[in-house]
Image (cartoon, rainbow, N blue to C red; front, side):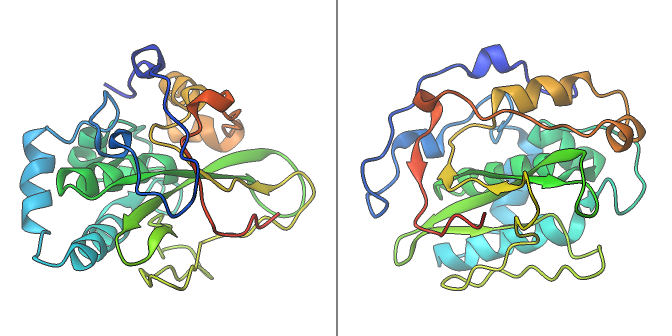
Length: 228
C-alpha cells in the first residue's frame, strides 16, 4: 500500500488555545498513515526507547534521519507513504520520513505532529513542492520542530538540539512559506497526491504542491517564528 486513503483520516481535531498547553490526545493517536501498532514499528520503537523521553525522541530522530534513504538524494524510485512501508522499504520523501518518525515517537508515548513548508524544488523559481518535517512535545521545552529528511544533501546538517531549531530549509523566495502550525495528521491533499504517484521520477517532473487543510484540522500553533 502506497498511501492511506485520506478519507479515513477526516476526524475534526480540537485546536489548542495556547502554545504552552499540553497537546491533546490526538497527538498520540494511531491512524492509517501513522500505523505504529505495526509489529516492525513497535519493535524498533522499543529498541530506541530509554528512560529519558528526550533521549528517546533523539534516538528516533537520528535513526530515521540516518537509516531511511531520502528518495531524491539516493535516486530511489519506490514511493512510500504509510509509516510501516517507509520502514520496510528503507526509503521515502521528506513527508514519508516524517510519517515514520511521528509513528516511532507515538509508539513511545511521546506526543508528536506534522509541520510543512512550501518551497521551490530547486533555485528561486517554480515549481513548488510541499516539504514535510515534524514537531515533538518535550515536557521541559514544549513544541520542538526538527527535520529528519537526512543530511545526505550537500549543505544540510540537521541535528536534534532542543532549544535551538535547525531546519533543513528556510522560506526565502517569492511564493515560499513556512507554516507555523503543528498538525496531528498529515494534510489530506498531500496524501491524495502521494497516493497517485507511480514513481519518484514522476515526482521530479511534477512535484507535489499540496494545499493546507481547513482550519478545523489545525490543532496547534507552534511558538517558532514563521520563517517566510
